[in-house]
Length: 402
Ligand code: PL4
Image (cartoon, rainbow, N blue to C red; front, side, top):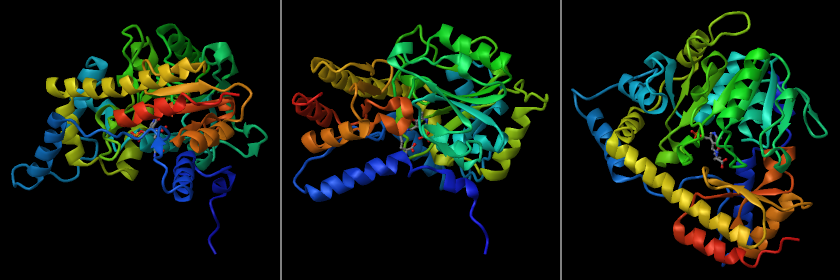
């Protein structure tokens, strides 16, 4: 009988978000009259705005005509790639350095193919669980030891270091996952911090996978929205990004990666050429309909809608953060990010999660699910209908913090 991929056995627990969904379902089944409000999984709730939605509809209509029909578009519609380069990167990249995809998560999974089983990995701790679990599946993480995977260097991001890690911990020749605005802490790295990251990566022959999935939530104009605002970043960084959160495309599925042609492995071979090969081999392109929606999002009217939708969720974030702060709970995030990272010192984050669910019927995400340094924290997501967020804030007034 064929044997199981041994890396699967290294996964310590189930994937975080289905576990949260399961706990929500179990709670709802046990309390059928409870009105459970989800501020847990970061899933968009608001309808796609009209101009962008019309782009999707027009895209679908085109497919029904002889002139407009299109089939495989492996690397993505050239117009969309060009628009992405112009809107997000000031035209810095040629269209063949932009790869359209079905989302950032899928790209993060596929990117591991470039680095194989032996690679050392460094992650912000806490971080989006796909970086660690994806590394485990790819065989890069080694086995589980008491506080983490042997092959992964955890870079603690805590209140003490202002949620930016000590870069000295990064080992040479590592793959570094870095997310800003960060999920789950909501912290956004500034120019000086990202410059230090780029410098470290270059000096230590590392490659950064920079996850910018929340860049459109940045409102402070001094904060970088892409790693490529940093000098020399194209020599050491790949960026992944997504239309999921700023357009409400979580179910539509559309994202992209940027792999600059000048990016090389230590051996001097081209990362871009390999990514082209990997994408051409195990990916068959994003939906053409989704891409027409993406195109509509990047014209003047679409950009206004993207701003309006992200403003809406940032409005929710402010309500949640203010409600928590009124209760004396320390929290960060929520100003340039849709996540609020709330501190419950000395508490087990799964216990706080259970307490908030039990007492207030509000689903959150326990910080420990994002890494060891998430212990004692709970993440509140700002993705929700306004009335639900307002009700959740009212319910929280009764929260017990100790
Ligand atoms: C639940 C830092 C959410 N089932 O939609 P994509 O694939 O373009 O982007 C996913 C993604 C990429 N990068 C970061 C993210 O935070 C996310 C989405 N994260 C969350 O609550 O943390 C949704 C999680 C979803 C999942 O597993 O991604």
